[in-house]
Length: 303
Image (cartoon, rainbow, N blue to C red; front, side, top):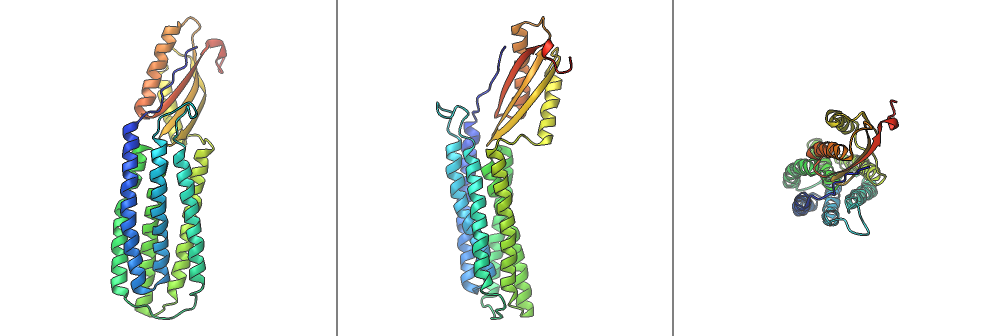
C-alpha cells in the first residue's frame, strides 16, 4: 500500500519569516524609545503602561526571531517532523510576558488612583506617543500579512500584539486628552488600569492559540472543507476517502487520510492517483506534508 509524503521544506519562506522578525525587532526598539521619552516628559502612568507593553513587544520580537531560526532548521534524526513547533513556544512565551506586563501595570496604577496632580509636557508627550502609535499600526498590519502569507504563528502572534498595542496607545491618548481638557487628572490611573485589562485579555488569547498548536489541534473548519473539496475533485476512480486527520506545526500542515480504490486497480494506478491528490493539496498549501493510506474497496465505510 503506497504512502506518499512530502517533507516540509520552505527555506525561502523560513528566511523571509526570520527577516520579518528582524524588522519587527528593530522597529519595536525605536517605538519603545519614543514611548519611554513620552512617559518621561509627562510622568503619566497611562503612557508608562503603554510603554511597558511596547517593552514586551521588544522582548517578544527577540524571542520570535530565535524561534523562527530554530523552526527553519531541517528535520533531523531526533526531530523527523522538523522544528516548526518552536514557533508555538515563542507565541506562548509572548502571551505569558503580556500577562506579566498587565500585572505590573495594575501594581503601578493602583498607587496613583485618586491622584489629581496635573501632568506636564502633554503636547510634546502626546505627539511623540501618537507618532509611535502610527509606526506601530503600519508594523502590525505588515506583520499580520506576513504571518498569513508565510503561515507563521510567531509572526501572527507578534502582529496581533503590535496591533493591540496600537489600540492601547489610542485609548491612552484619547483618555489623557480628555483629562488634559477637563483637568480630571485622576483619569490617568483609570486609563492605565483599563490598559492592563486589555493587555491581560490579549495575553490569554495568545497563550490559548499557542496551546492549541502544541496540542496538535486540527485545521480550521474552512480549511478542512477545502481539503475535502480537493479530495473529491481529485480522487478519480477511487471510491471514497475517510479518516481525514490534520494538524499544524508552524507553517507546515500535516494531512493524513485513507483512500479506498477498486480492488482491480493496480499499485501503479493507485500510486499515480495519490500523486495527483498530493499535488493538488501542495499547490494549495506549499508546506503540506501529505500521507495517504490506500485501501481496497471492502474497507469502504459506505460499504
